[in-house]
Image (cartoon, rainbow, N blue to C red; front, side, top):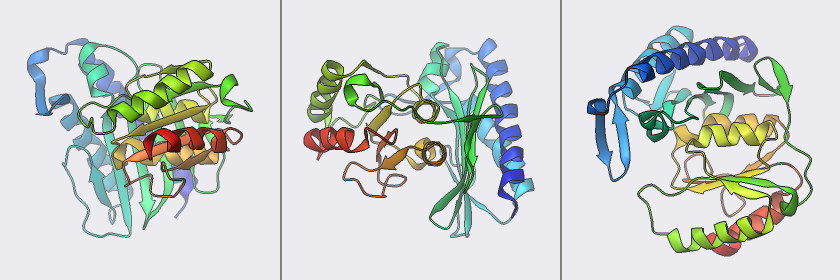
Length: 263
């Protein structure tokens, strides 16, 4: 398998899907919204975007299964699995607010070997494959070289419906707000991680995440020179519903703060 060539083809799929999202946003109305759960929304745009992605990826790798947010395709223990979020940042999209992104990863058994995040509003495609550098629109990207949290800008995500760690989370957020350049909540975890990879953020953390939120971004951060883990410092960040990613320098300091409040 030529991962570089396949990544280029996946980038094309992500870009085409992003163009579809932008087009649909122009005439979007709230009567197209469905409620999946508390503060958890979906629209026909999400579903149609996912169907488009699945159809395109099946042509690229017919033997692969799917882990897809909207459930339009499934995995049956295949060696290769695509992990797809057709619209990461649905709430932003509904309100006409950037960013929102297409996130596509390919897993070989339990290892992510391709990651593509396309932020549709800014027309920025972030990508990497196993053994590669990380790129954005054809240019190599790298995590920042900030040395401490005090010199860092932090990305995070607020809980939508899982509030069992809310008090602890607010404690961590207060610490980072008081001891860094500030904290930002953009509403798209995939975009947050891409921004760590290209040095716009020094770190990102969130809990109650899903595999399609983080699989692609995790690989891109790692290939850009960053570090990724769960809150305990382990490797269960794709399916473990919690994520820390940072540049190479502040990881230990950052993880210690997250552990203090959230473990």
